[in-house]
Amino acid sequence: MNHKKIGIYIHIPFCVRKCNYCDFNSFDTDLETKINYINALCAEILEYAHIFGDYSVDTVFIGGGTPSILPVELTRQFMDCLFKNFNIDTNAEISMEANPGTLDLNKIKTYKELGINRISLGLQSTVSKELKVLGRIHDYETFLDSFRMLREAGFKNINIDLMNGIPEQTYDSFIKGLKMIKELNPEHISIYSLIVEEGTPFYNQKLNLPDEDEERKMVHSIPLILGDEYHQYEISNYSKKGFECRHNIKYWRREEYLGLGLSAASFINETRFKNTDNIRDYISLFKKSGSSDIIKDLIDGKLTTKENPKFYDNNIRFSEFEHLSNDDKMSEYMFLGLRMNEGICISEFEKTFGISIYQKYGDKINLHIGEGLLDIYEDHLFLTEKGRDLANYVWSDFVGD
Image (cartoon, rainbow, N blue to C red; front, top):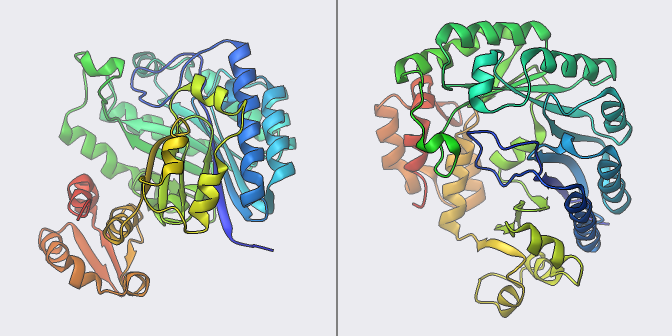
């Protein structure tokens, strides 16, 4: 029996309408397409089951889109399929993203019955004007109703998503909203800065954004407002002790995970691959034999490059496929590990790669220590507060090296 640990990500690409800042693969569609998609998703689950069925699944994350938009019968369909075909740990963290305005008590109770034990609730802001600019479908009262229903149904692990640096937002409105959320006593709070991405409605609009100093003031105030009840364990994430998101930590620690569904990304055997972005291709692919032979070869270490004919024979399956070089692995270890407040274990780097971290990155580490952006305590290298402000600059220095 193979007891190797793995996480599973499931992508549900549907939403009521696309938010003005969103660049994820998500869209509104009809019920027939949703049914066909879930049938294809279940076919993909079955296809992978004979490869990973005896692995121990310790985290599941259902993201989107808005997974909570699905009729509850379709959620039950893919969750039942997952549990019947994979070895899900009894204490697995099973998260689902949900948006206020798409929940009701029956749905919430069903989620709990299906084994979902963590809900990530997309609030973004407590201010109606800011929510409207973002294109959200809910107001704060709708969010409160959803949060109370989750508590009523017995959910004891709830994350709330917030954003800073959004149009019309002020320092005062952000701080007031953060205090309101803290009073609700959620187990986890994620706070992301808005990034205006090309291809989104925001990209070509003239936006009334907070200036850089005001946004930085917002970010620096977060730990002061949250206090000792919440600790920052990653650059955008705060939790009560023991409620850190175990699935996301897998990403930052480069642990293995399997992505299921449209555009879903996987990381297996030092190889990153991503499913097709085209929903018609995805649905049609799983009406016939898929290409799990590629994944089997990958797990067995037989598939190492795109030149393998099996990749081209089945390239409808993947939009991206890359077997990482040793330099790629070290680069990822650095910029992903530096996302976490604990930083990078210096001795573990040498144990993993057979080379001193200073031999590989000494000049860059010393440069950023001199700039006050990195620091070392005992055996860990980590971002300072100033370094977190300039994290993209620091991370970029380790990308592709």
